[in-house]
Image (cartoon, rainbow, N blue to C red; front, top):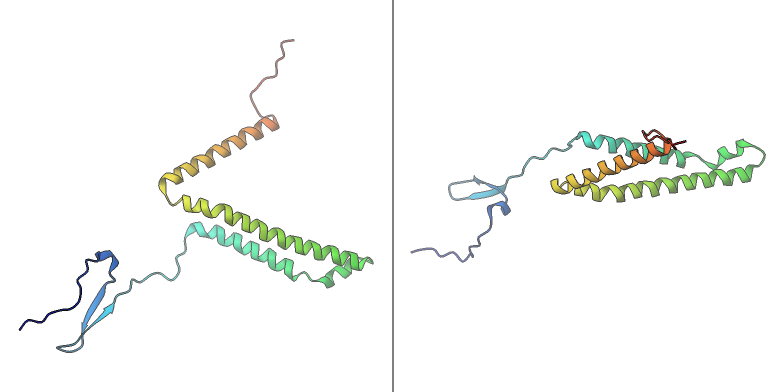
Length: 155
């Protein structure tokens, strides 16, 4: 007598299947254990070291701004309350400038980083960067006067 399977056969691409290892426990029992790829826990890449340093610098400036307390303002002179309000405002606006600038940099560079993953758009982005650097250098050299243009008026 033939055994009939009630399971539906579905054509699933092999890339979608997780690899499994069949382990035989006894002569009749087998168990499937999924295999896992070993991923490195920490990948240190050279390109990320600059962003790590900038992040550490921003965190350090933020901690320094938070650590400055109101008591230090009293030592600056007889105008205690005015100086205290001034340094409190400096600390608050410093934190504001730090958060706004880091948020703006993140907002600007995140899409550029995504575009650099595609080779065609990366070439386009690099061409734009090169052209903008050339344009800025030409404008600055014209402003400073470092150019080969001669002002001969024909007198």
